[in-house]
Length: 333
Image 1: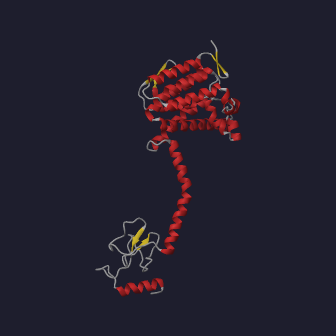
Image 2: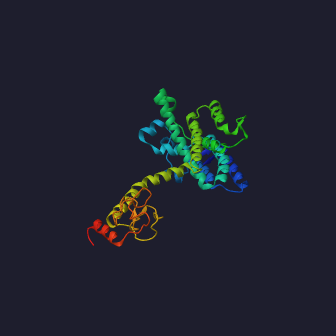
Image 3: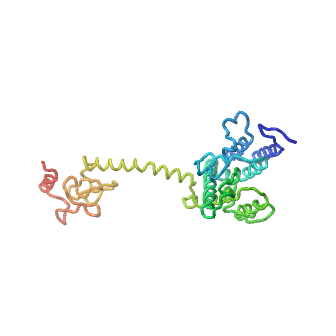
């Protein structure tokens, strides 16, 4: 029996999706909010309710097409195409897969980490698919099958999530009736779906698998940090570098003009303060950038101490000698 939902006519699969989602959340001790929000977002975009239609671009404006994305630098196609589906079976199949994977991953990782992971996998999968399409065009002149292909759907992200979910699993999984080790389930599904379901995006699914592997590699080589967090931290450091350079330069110039040292304290070694060395002759603390003492002109040695000493038995310098050095240094009493 057909039923109208929004501007779409449902053939009974959307109520099944709603019932399955409600059942899984009812039985789950934790109610993962990000997974529910992703399912709701994909479903609302597919249904296109009238009051949201002005804010939801039509599918013709968001098809993932490598040629159009590179030609027009179209980020709308790059990101939004993952949230569109061409039919009810396409949507329901992907959302049931998202429900199963999302509940497990979000419960284990936490909502914030899970949201960051999904954003990373979305950008990585779309970017890798784009590079694969362009590479096939440049090296093999494969233009029509992939470079000018139109595709939509969340399946690229789902393949990446499958890789992450099964990365350390020692179990076996059923993939369309075939038993395979869980860690290779995504590869088996890639081949079987391509054989059983004509018209699916092979590069989109392959890009998702490679995105999952790249995500795990980046996370493993950066002490468990999320690649998105690493990227944001790197951009922040790059933006702050000019400011840090100017601040250090200003401090250096100010130290050269007015001096930043102090007199007194232990004569037997350099001070514990970072960036400062102590003159053995007059105990003046000088900037680490200077090679001679600002107070008396005594040279500095490699160990942070002054190079001139009055004698080997004592670090003390007669007052007259110290006064003479200061007069020579500054030219006045």
